[in-house]
Amino acid sequence: MSNTEINRIFIFEFISGGGFNHVDIPISLFTEGFGMLRVIVEDFKNLGFQIKTLIDCRIQHMIRYLKTDFTKEINQNMDIFLEVKKAVKDCKYVFIIAPEFSGILYNLTKIMKDQNKIILSMNLEAIRLGSSKFETYKYFKAQEVSTPLTYHLPSHLLHKDHIIKIVSKFKLPIIIKPEDGVGAESIFYFENKSQISSFFTSNQSHFESDRDYIIQQYVPGKDLSVSIIGNSQGSNILSINAQFVEISKLNSNSSYLGGYTPISDYENIRKILKKQFRQLNLIGFTGYYGIDFIRKTDNSLSFIEINPRLTTSYIGIRNITKKNPLLLILHPDMDVNNVVDPNHEYLSHFFHLRLRYVGELPFTEVNEGLIPQIIKEIPHIVSPPLALNEDPLFACFIATKAKNLKDSKKQKNRLISALEKKEFRVVK
Image 1 (tube, rainbow, N blue to C red):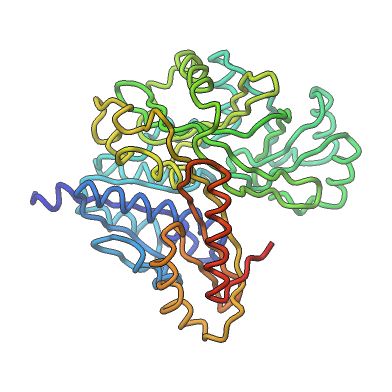
Image 2: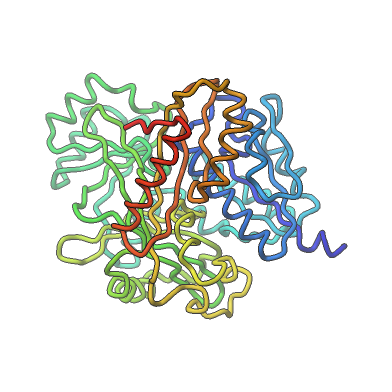
């Protein structure tokens, strides 16, 4: 094997890499997915790797923003799993970013394991656990850490009478969400039984009939997450992040709006987490993953779920570390303090931005000329503005680097002003 083959890595991000090649690309998920792909490619490239990836042919103009050595376009006639198998053959290393639902992340990772590749993302056992919210709940309960009461709701029992019967065991409010969902996808919040009855009478179509869900006690408090790199030596806390999640109230949609890192009370929460991790026994979790939790009003923590993959927070985290965070994956013996800034001198706010182009340039010229110019001038834009089907509505993902949230807000306002000069308007 040649030296280039030894250092070659296949990095695959499911959404931008052709995973939705038979359907419309979900634009909100795409901006996060492509943003993660872009930064992880750059970070591996900076460590001397040769990079291979796949990209959906509908967004082939986005290849210019990736520091890859080889990129194959995926069209609607291709089998994405077959293409992944072919692409990874001459690579020693792999890094997979994919959703947990429908076994996608698990099956992709198994392909890599079956081909004896070195998996630098997450190991199969951890993916199997983290892909099931109910299994994760049982795991937290077994390890005796605080977690909200959760009931499994199989697809064949997804009807009003059964749900109201189960809800009788809960202290309201509750939330209902997919058992294998990602992010803020399809999360519904209910404060009383009449809301549940009304919703399931008139809005049953909001639920996928062949999909399992969970009912979970709603825990008030601050939505936080911890980003972790696990290896044979233990669990390294990379950062503790605030999350902005808008939970749907009846007919509205839940959404993940972004977040910032690190949180203000970092050291105190880190000490609590380290103690909890000893209880959780995370030694079997290798690679990059995240845990979502709630900091309640009494400052105690309630663990919600495990995300067995690179999470969106990484886009902000890499802005504020002293060194490339991926060093902790490649060098398990490295002290985390060589990478993480213990003084937390900087903060990164990461968020979606929806834009409308109001200028007169044709769509192709916006993509080929205007947006590349914007990316050069505004490096905070991680996932470049994208519109599909010549729609004037664009979506992008941004990560700032500032001393505090106040300065970050000023950065955001300057960025919006710069975009307005290019004839983009923010859609509220």
